[in-house]
Image (cartoon, rainbow, N blue to C red; front, side):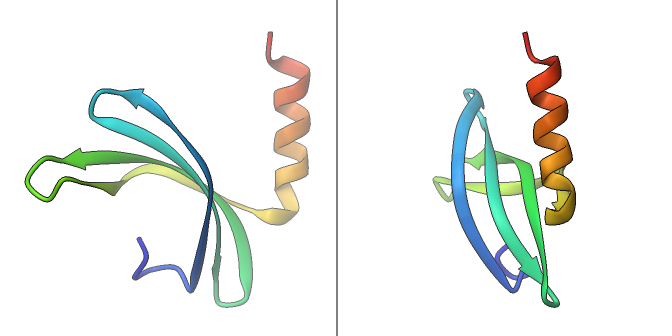
Length: 75
C-alpha cells in the first residue's frame, strides 16, 4: 500500500498464522493521519508480504476511543 499512502510508519506486527501477519501502521493521506491495522499475506514467489483488503484505517482522532474500548473489554 506504499503507493496509496503519502507516508507510512510501521509501529508493529504479529503473526496471525503461517501465511499471514497483522501490521499496525501510522499512515497519512492528504494531510490526514490514520492508524491502519491490516492483514498482510505471504507471497512465496516474491518471498514478501503484501497488504490485503482485510483491514481498517481509523482516523487518529478516534484512536483514543478504540484504546478505551479495548482496555475496558479485553479479559
